Image (cartoon, rainbow over all chains, first blue to last red; front, side):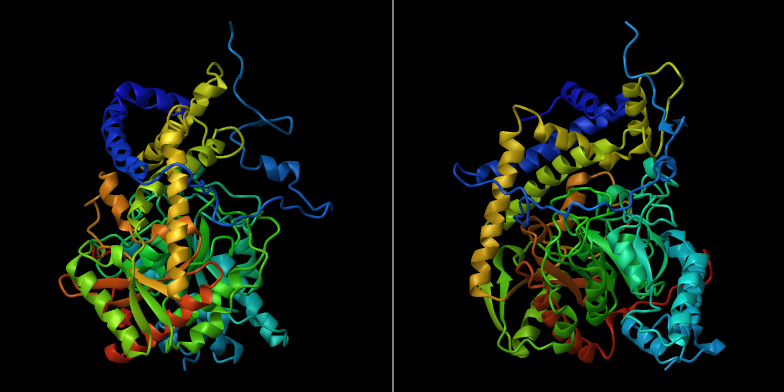
Length: 97
Length: 513
């Protein structure tokens, strides 16, 4: 299984990374090598072995339904790259056409 | 014992955390004097070591004053009150920046403290500042930090390990007696091993992830770094325990780690040598010191047997599917909207374009590689073949551990296959870099407890070697019991701590580089 430069470009788009052409060339070779190495898991992962998602099997962790203090709007906005009217200001999210 | 006169400032930085706490509690030295001595040490050696990204001198002295005031008022002090600490820059701090070694969070000040941070403060521990790390804890050398690498105090031309390399280097350079690291694939134990100190990965869920900026949520575990096993145990106890803010936190008592570190007796204990990690895969000097450490355990009364864990050699490939998969999801939060860097917001570009430009500018190469690798492993058509298979291998590794722990109480291996390598040697060779975590990854995947303690110097390069001791989940105390026994016996043989064999750092601010 090898990965092409075009596939890496597609992964970059999915990952929201505006990679340069030079990066695409560089990463394509490295990712191909890494994917080749990690594919070894297929040698031993036979049918019927249950998947393990987490080290500690905990389910349905609830807390008491009591109010606890939360961040003020000022605190929440303190690290924002841009704010307006006590809200996060974001670039346009819809296309013009 | 050190008293407060001028000649002892240097000595104060050589004390263990336990000694400092005892001296502060007895009034032999003030917490302010201890803190100032460590801040002075940072000024003297950190231009060379570069362990810290941010030093919080004023805040540290204020915290120390608070300890001194409480003592004067007769209020009870915790067992580490007044002891300085170096905090990895991946745990949030209200009064200090938290960058995770990344440009995307450069100068970000979190609005809240991590649970670990809060517990340290509550214990009267003095946080000196935030330490360097591989970006978002992805790496084994600190070379992936956006702010430049840290340097190994044993040899400034070599890596201090990673990702918690800044904390390990700070502790090894006597800039702080204690450090906090986080372990996802070995990021506490590997830097501890190559810096010649003690580093412990607690059982997953034993220490809180609340306020730990997430890399791989099913693996990330904060833990202690120190120069002695007892100091690590004292810090382990102070930072651990159930936290309702972390839904994967274990609701069980903290294992009796301090008592175990004081017990330091392995007679009758069953120790398993992992066959797969004790063959020819390590550097010669690493293998030699490991073999000696096993013989030492036997001479101390442990029953040593060899135990095969056949799937451990698949841990590395499984990890490099699971951790990047979780990372690609976790790091989606860096979207340039609510905090951190924003690039290209010129009034015409879309949110999606700004997001892509920001992430391109804000993330370094290793983070980009792992995000794309994870995106690949999770994408439809590849999910079953990669992420799904890796999760099955995780089960096989855990089953290997379960079977082994039916035969033995602890497992041992070298912590790392090699000693500290030169800076730059593996910087753009990801697969070579990943091999540094070959022996540490199984315990992360299984979520159990593992410690690294110094076991000597490799004869070929004179650099530290670590012994890894692994124990079942929630049996963290066993690793301390074995680690303390090894430490005591080896220090008797060496005539002092291993770190005493490191050559002194030139206390001449930046002249040696």
